[in-house]
Length: 311
Ligand code: A3P
Image (cartoon, rainbow, N blue to C red; front, top):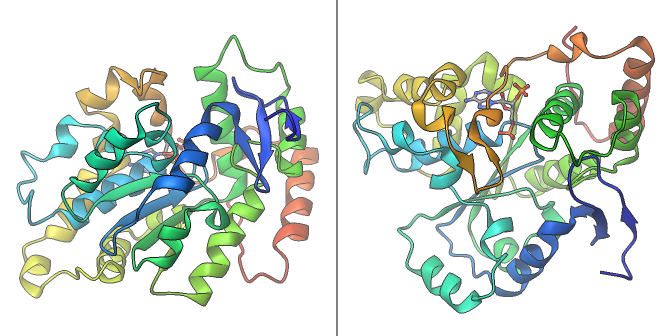
């Protein structure tokens, strides 16, 4: 670690520049072990995202789409009593442990298809994920909203240890790419390029598009994962039931998501804030708008990846 470039993160942990991304210090061991040991199966599904882009939502959607035959009752569904992060564990955390052999045997015995989450950028995923026929569903979000969501989340969960930056200073760091798993641009572009090069391997989704037509995207994800809805399922309203089960209002108000902690580190209720498009207008000054717009133009121009502004 000592040889890696280091920055004070704006949450609780230092960030180390590890394989071209800013890895929070508490993740490095897990990411290293994951790269060394994880054996992907062709049937695996990986839900990938930059933090605060809609991971909790996409994990719930993917879990309920893939497992809809196992759990066909929406009145008695695991998502009503478990948080989606408990049902879809982070690969980045799984290997943060001493007993790797135990983890490996647990992983190889998991019911298939296994579904995992990750915030790791595409180039740093294990070779095994890149080489197997597993599928990756990536969610990305307008950086204006992602930044606000991250900032408020970090302030809530690390009120004492947060580096005392103003929102403007935090935005400076964000634009330079200094944020856990950043730079954001490299993160989204890595998956974006891969989704164009190998569209059967990586599906690239945008939070805003899911918000605008969730039923369409539930169908799209199912097709991508080779488990399309049958006509009978469609006429029985299964798509709508999944959309409703995973909706912000539904998930936020579940007892299991209102109380208790996530991985013993923060209260689960902080995973659900507003769930809206465009809340950034309530936080950005004109100078901040200019700063982030310019950065996005610089970083994303020519890539084909763009975001509508929602002001
Ligand atoms: P806001 O802070 O803008 O409200 P992640 O899950 O990657 O940590 O992202 C968190 C963001 O997604 C938060 O955004 C949170 O409120 C929102 N979110 C959580 N569950 C959601 C859901 N079921 N539908 C839509 N948005 C959701």
